[in-house]
Image 1: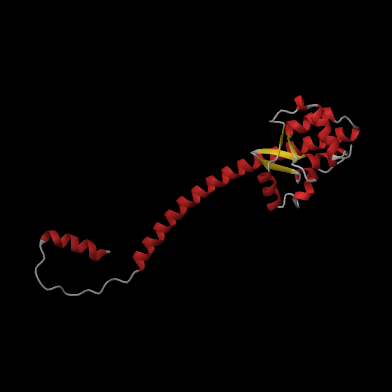
Image 2 (image 1 turned 90 degrees about the horizontal axis):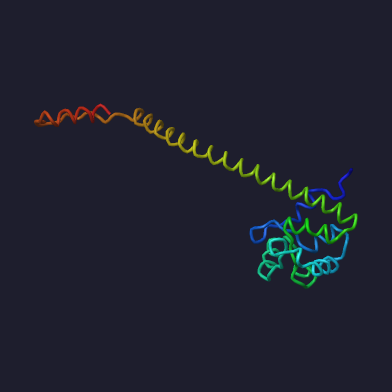
Length: 183
């Protein structure tokens, strides 16, 4: 069966707010083929199905952040109200409240997008860990290479001109003097 909604379209509508991946009520309404006010009405009729970890309302500061980061074009885009956002579990619960064929197909596509996003994040964490290990290895190699270059520079440095020393040098100092001159 051909996908009703491409996963990429849905992925662009998933935001990270309060440490959770969520979708705006307005975006979900469009995907489900209903008006945002109708979606909110159904949610209000079934409030027991939507605890705070399934759905919450954005505050003014969060809305301003979304506008400043171009996640939404402006406050007007939200229709003048503070939107509700739904976590993955909340989106799944919406399927039980909105029981149209379009809502069911949209919900399947949204669940697939959340799964794909979770897989991408897991891959990203693994990649970040491997990159960190590589950076540590390179740092150690850089220090070793720097020490090698320093030794080469010392070997390539022109020897100091031999000046005849006048005077008497004690035997203990002679050993130190010879060691310094060999460098």
